[in-house]
Image (cartoon, rainbow, N blue to C red; front, side, top):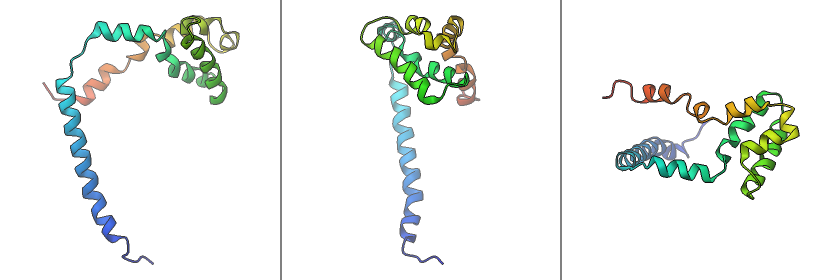
Length: 134
């Protein structure tokens, strides 16, 4: 049996939550409208990482090949740390790693670590988000 001791909280949480979401959306809209993008700087900054931004894609590719998430994480982290320490580019280190080679070919590493693969759903997402907008 329910009592009414929490009913005031239940009556407040709905409106407060929607007001907060509305506020967040307005703030985000203003931020995006005023955003200035510098593609050359973006590319330069990405290159400074040595390819570390591909780490999640590699981890997921290893998991799809049957590697446990923990082992995949260990393999990716090992190579990511070498890259972070300046011991080579992430993709090159992955291709040289004997344990990674058991699961991914060099070609598969290249595919998973390609910008094309990263951006493959951008058009679909834009169509869905901006449907009917000009």
